[in-house]
Image 1 (cartoon, one colour):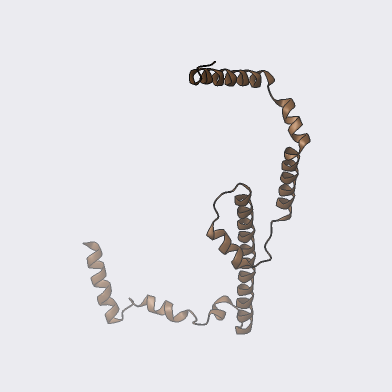
Image 2: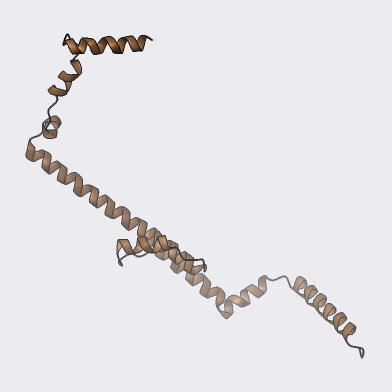
Length: 160
């Protein structure tokens, strides 16, 4: 109720012009020119605005480049682990241009992974894996498999 009374009385006082128009004076006292509001000349203000726009464009370009590098890394990992491709990653790479590659530290990591995989795929790598195997477990599994096959053959063949 007090709010309603205050709003009605303040509107009436504003209409009379007896001190209720303080807000209008504030609007008139602020300069309409943004350069004057910032305390600069018109030329300084325009130059400042150009610098702000250029810095924003540089930041946006660097951000797009980083996004494209991350997308390139995700594409590489998807290829490596045979995962489905993502259209979003491919569009990010295309937007940044064709000069996108993996960052240097990630390229080193990928190269190390490839060397390790090549070592595992070689004959020497397979021989090292044989040394790490549990021969008793393999022997037991082979005997169990042979026994199962022998029993299956005896059931099917009347000569044995």
